[in-house]
Length: 413
Image 1 (tube, rainbow, N blue to C red):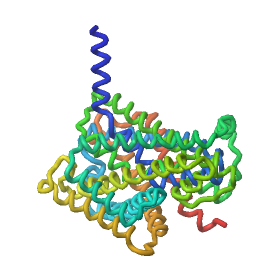
Image 2: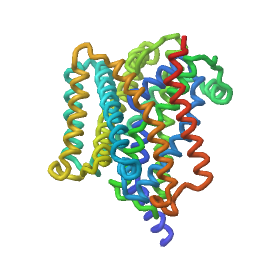
Image 3: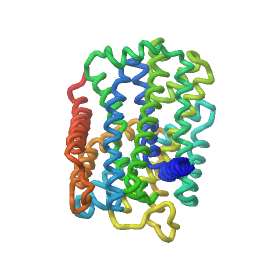
Image 4: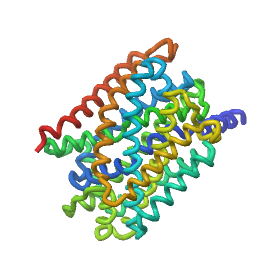
């Protein structure tokens, strides 16, 4: 009886801690991520699935360090960077991040518009309505309510499993492609590999993960449960990505259909796998887009306010954290207006926001590694030698991928 009580108390504790890892991991599969995976499946079939393995490893490494720093210090990454790098450097970093995240949030609302257009809903209805609902959730809700809704969104992304199975994939070919992929190495295939690995890591994610464990009030004694949350989130992220690639590989690739964005994939699936499969794919895009359209500006408002010493948090009232709520509102409104603006250069906005992300990612990751190894900040919880080898290795690879991605177009065909 005592043993059963102990088991149930541990399960209860895990459920109480559950959230930050799963939510942060799931946001990886935003409109941009889904587009990357869909195009990969359509162009290369199953042959890019193997890239999800290093993506999974890197995601776990980075999120573990973020969570550990947040729990040990009780401070957000932005706070720590300001305290250790100074206000001037912090200002330059965060101006760049702010501009990039406005572009990223605009891209998410483009995903909202595109997904609901599959169901015949105009963007002039869907985008303002979703923007208003997102604003109400954050400004009028609590952290606990928002987290529960975010977790439902995370689970909803598993609808891509249904879409993939309805495409009747060839499981034997998938296994062979993972073990022995057949990909001609050129600028386009290398860009796709980099895109798949790189879409798992974004600068803003590091700040959100650390802020969310602080907001939840997690303690180091329960860190093993936080790690389970992180691993579950990473697994869910990779599973969703896997089935998006499979859905498009087993249908679009086999018919030689090329696409430019996730909305195209949803429309192209209709004659190949049926209307239901098309609608399920579009619904997944909608969920991912609205999910990220909520988290992205929220994360931005969090880390900008942290960096400059302003109060921040969903559980605070407007008059307790006016800068936080004003910034959140401004980012949402700007993003919605850009989407509704006729002939807005959405592709250019998406491209340049990714370029800025790419330029800032090495700075953020190196800062993070230096902080997590600072004994004055982390005490006995600094990285162990093995963690440093893996951590610096992951950072080096990510920096290399980022530089390659930025330089490659200069030498591409």
